[in-house]
Image (spheres, rainbow, N blue to C red):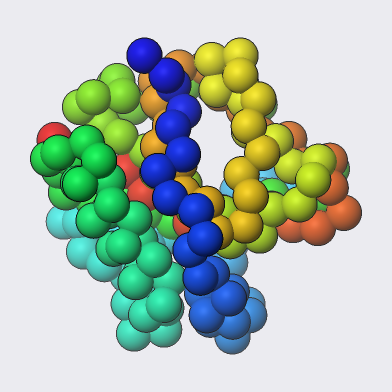
Length: 159
């Protein structure tokens, strides 16, 4: 089984990026090189839907594509926008229970050459407007050796 599968490309991300520009004060630091905007709150409630309608539209579109590709992919239990600064890294780690019960999807909103995601030993460069399913129960990490922030919308579903 592949641990990372591209499920869409050519998604229009510029409206979402414009929204994020207007919400610059909503980012908070996880560590010096990473920032995030949480999009799901208590009881799986959708946060910032009024401020980020295009961003939520992208997430909904990729969720729809995933349902067509994989069947019942379940409900969204977690979503956020993540930003990794140039030179930053997210060290190797595992998330979730497994790639069947809990699924992770990432949408590349900004990603330049030098930004790389590694899942189960395979390196991937998410290109602008691509969406990927990732088995994050496998060891995975991110490095941003580009000159620009790497920005992704990501969400998890549980069957």
